[in-house]
Structures are given as structure tokens and as C-alpha cells.
Length: 272
View 1 (cartoon, helix red, strand yellow):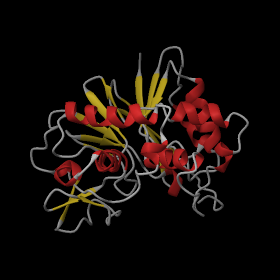
View 2 (spheres, helix red, strand yellow):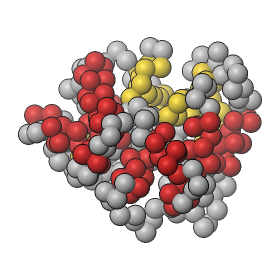
View 3 (cartoon, helix red, strand yellow):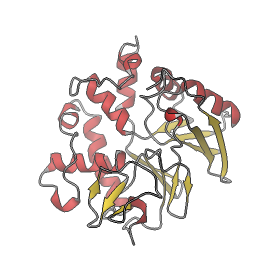
């Protein structure tokens, strides 16, 4: 069974279909992992979510920050921002089914000997720690009371495990690490102020995957989220967000033989 990982789609459904055609995707024989952020950016979020929901046996997506934001807006825990354009999901006839499917997606998942997550892992986490932290959030999100999580997940603090004073702050830290993280400061604390390229990271910051001897070392991590980072394939990470929503490319990577596939976005000026 060929296994593919694909970077953030962000509502770019036509480009997603073009990429599926390029890799000659066969739902009966192939499997597709997505790095999160199915929605928000491109012009057709609803059909992206519908496709994944309709193909449970051959695909899976971890949750990204935009996916979680959609759930918070849908449940009334957050207002829609002017730049958000996932209203096609909210207004769909099958919105309840799509949103229920979305809130049951994992934050992290094992892909053979690799791990897939939208943004990254805290340096203090072992792989087991990361799974435990993610499971705590996933169980609450899938429960009858997801508002308990969705109403407290926004905010930049705490910035490290040692400063999580209660369970709500621990949930927020887990979500921020797995869906929003790019760089850390010199103390190893989350730093959300930097969103530019890898080459321009200031001396006082470090990419989360460059920390010396992180507890998760030894496991290669497949991720997306950091579009300015672009395609990056090292011993530690396979980063696949190549900025389709910003006019870049949509990228798939066949994990069996490390073959790369890309389509250009040909971004419409009307997109966000």
C-alpha cells in the first residue's frame, strides 16, 4: 500500500484534486496522510472536508490551528475574523456531520516509524508524552462538552511545561505546541512572534526542531504549518507546507520511496 503525506490544503480543493491525479491516487490501494489545516485560505474548504470524510479507509488528517478555529467559531466560542473564509462549511447542509467528523480527528498520529503533527513537538516531550498530552485534548474535543476546551484554547501562555499552572493551561500549551509552534527562545519557551523564513531566524531564537537533544529525538516528524519554512527533509523532520494558499505549491511525498510530487497553486487574486 503506497503511503503519501500531503501538506496543508487550506481550502484549495481544485489543487488537491490536481495533486491526487498527479500521484494517481487509488483509494483501494493507497493511503493519504494530511498535515492539518484542511480549511481557510483557498476558495473551497467544504469540499476538502467532504473528501476526507468520505474516504475514511484511505485517508486521515491531523488537526491544524485553522481546523480548531473553525470548530471554535462553529460552537460560538469565537467570532469569525474578517480574513476567515470557511463560511462554506458553516452554511453547508451537512455542516453538523462535517464538524462532528472534524472534531474527532487526532492532534498527532504514528505513521509507521514516523509521527505526524501539524506544527511540532515540545523539546521536553518524549513521543509517549506527546501522545498522552494529545489524547487528553482529543478526548475532551470528542466528548459531549467540547466547549470546555474550545473556550480556553486561545492565548500565548503558558510558554513551557513548567509554567502550566492548571489543566486548562496544559490543554492550551498542548494545542499551541502541536498546531502553532515555529520557534523557541533561548530558554526553550514558545515564541509566537516569528513567522518568516528559516534562514532569517534571529540569533536569540531557534527552530523547534533544531533544539539540542530533544526528548523526542530518534523519531522523524512529518509536519506542516510553517509555510515560510517550505519543503524541508532532514533526519528530524519532513516539513510539507509549501504555501499553496499563498501562491506557492501543494506538496505530496510518497513515504515508501521518498518521491516528491507538487502542483503550482496558480492563486486567484480573490483568495485570502
